Image (cartoon, rainbow, N blue to C red; front, side, top):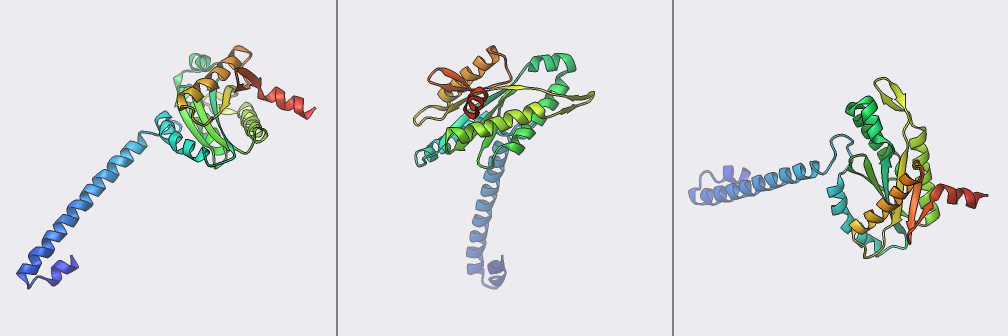
Amino acid sequence: MREVINCIGNQRTLREKLNNYFHAQMHFLEATDKYKTELISLRNCYDTLTGLPLRQLLYKDFSRIASLRKNKSSTFYLSLIDIDYFKSVNDSWGHNVGDIILQELGQLLAANVRASDRCYRFGGEEFIILQECQNYRDFTAVMLRIMDLIRKHRFMIPTGCINITVTCGTTTVREGNELQAIIDRADKAMYFGKQNGRDQCRFWSENKMIDIEQTVSAMAM
């Protein structure tokens, strides 16, 4: 605009400067529209209830995480967390209370995972955590802390407070594996935990569903 004003007395130069200005303005408006579209698309990748990224962002993130895995000696782990007896919560107290539980659990997970971890709402009452750990011992320490936090947390509902438990299935992110194959392994471990008492964390290892808490207790003895 400064250049346009300075050329007011020169019609030929003014026409050129105005043309440049209008082209620059068009590029700016196009960039603004593109940015707005990207923001809307990104917002749709986040859960309005819990504030956590949704599964579509997990799939987008995974290719980047997999490429980082190739250059590191550490290991990535995927954990699938499912609320126990969630249908009973909805049946007993209603879906509004169910939403409160989901929201508060999402916030609890987001506040207590490490800065390097990623937490997602996978769908329904399921959450996924992607973690990078130096070794299996470090990973189990993180998961035991999360399980303990959930057990002890008092969830505030309109009629008072309730406790919940979760069952977790975990597995390693192996180089070359598709994300769905990794999730399937974690799901099998989680389902095994559901069938064997719930309120536990199972690790999938070559079709062996290892009880992480029992393993750690045995190692400590």
